[in-house]
Image (cartoon, rainbow, N blue to C red; front, side):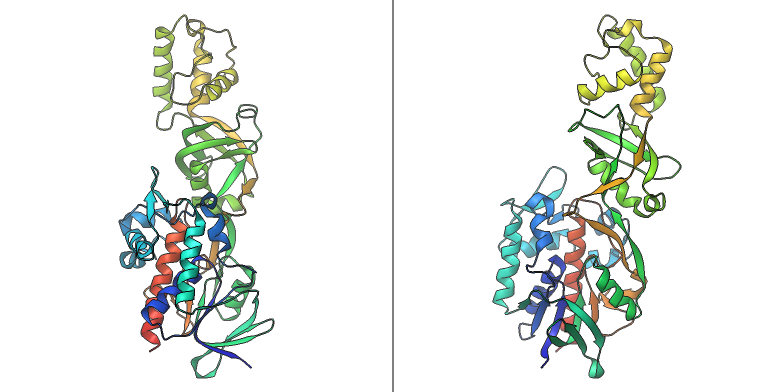
Length: 408
């Protein structure tokens, strides 16, 4: 015996819950179910932002916000004009969750706990009698007669007028969408750190500096705090570079060379000039003892050593060649990347349903009536900072609006 619903949402994550709650708020009479293959819902929300849940970002202008999306920039302009970061803040406040802005623009619940977001969603789902069905793995789905969707799990059949796919980067679901005629842009990892074995950074784990990083032989470059880790380099600057270069770096099999400017926006000539001035100013002082720049002494010490300057050398004794080598290490240091590391809990994929096959005014498939998408199932991804969640909220809101207009 099949179970009948007005709307079935596949995927019990952020996008799924947000869509379901917004549908129920617009039309409480609709019968809604969330189908989740795992034992628990909202698992990614729980671990996001280090367990604090980076809900959104304090960028309130749609045309500015879209610039944080390596894939989806053009398509999200319209949707963000309808539901943007400010609307997200207002939505959560209306549901009893106050958000705060951190210095870098990221926004979290004031409780600093992702459980606050989970509790908010679960309470709303209970209030509207949204059925949450866990351990339900979809085996097949198809557009049945009379404009209904038939969804078969391992032990149940569900029938719904509208089906919303919010299953994230699940290859099995992408395969099913492909069987329905949708094009899947092959997935590659986004947001990963660089594996680098190099004597210059070997013992500097935890050291961070604002740097500009370029991928040699390409147009890829990014600026931001760059963190040295025991496996190489990480931090917002590196993650930003990996997001924008997701496809290009996958094509290189994650083997390439980067050029690092530890002085961020200082040119080689400006650096050389500064070093010559320091040579005069600090003639009697030891070069490697204290960093004259705004980054940690440990990094400075390592770079002076790499430039062939020993621990006792004074500024006055620096030769022309040593100055040149030091300037090179500071603003044009080259490092060999051999592989990547990804954060399992923060994993983001570039790839998914081809955006040309989705109507961004409704989030409905252009190929099938009553089939909607939200979240990372689409070929949309962003850098870190709350942007991926904002995409989920916006798409969920628009899908909800469209579904409630269609189903009376």
